[in-house]
Length: 298
Ligand code: PLP
Image 1 (cartoon, helix red, strand yellow):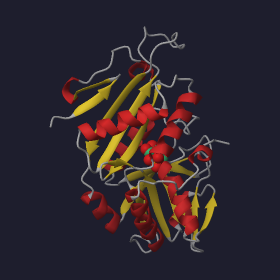
Image 2 (tube, rainbow, N blue to C red):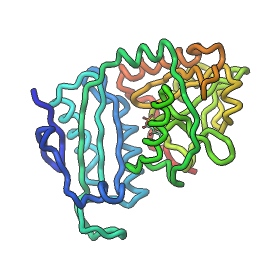
Image 3 (cartoon, rainbow, N blue to C red):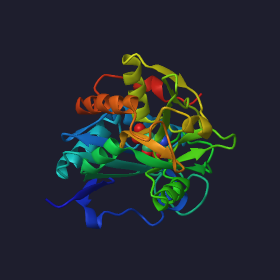
Image 4 (cartoon, rainbow, N blue to C red):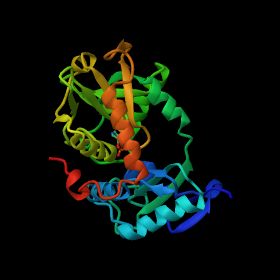
């Protein structure tokens, strides 16, 4: 069956799927998005993603295009029509199309696009077994990284730098020398004292859905968790490091800027959390977290 994308109320052949040239997403990055994992043909932690999406829309005063229930139907139907069993769905909502002017246009319909694709997870599994490299880059993003906006140029530049360095991810470092997060992931370390550390929620990072799920799994495992910023030096002295995201689950980071972390291989905590998260994803994340409470920036 040919691939289809959802665009503004219609399922259209992928090759013909298009939005207007004056869409504000295109001209101003005036839009938000979500990426939701699909496992066994079902969405993982859909509720968490939709709660975060609504929060992003509200923070930017973009009208909700439809109810959460209706959006869920659209997402599931896009997955079904593309026969995706394992992969992810990309959902983007922009303020809409209007004659180019910086200030918001009047009451125009938001643009809604959904694209589902299959992903072969064998490469991710091989990466997880070996561990991946990360580099550090200055965090040059804007002041509202808690909003999942489509303004992703700093992240794209950082990811390209990582790619050119043969690394999997770039950890972004703020002006005070603290790691904020990865270019498309949240950053974690395990200290020599076995404390799991990840940066606290604020406007400086995106509240990852995987991060929230992982925190809950870690607590249930009885791990000591600290939500605080850590420096690059602390990461280099750590026992383990890893990143979390919808597409990476928990991915062990075994070197930073070419220097090994811990024993230079995937750590036991990261590997254990990855296994727990795989089980969580297989259950589609049902009923694990209070998503409504989880993403408010202080
Ligand atoms: N931080 C940033 C900047 C991201 O772009 C992402 C995901 O794309 C994440 C964190 C991880 O978020 P999630 O776990 O919801 O995929």
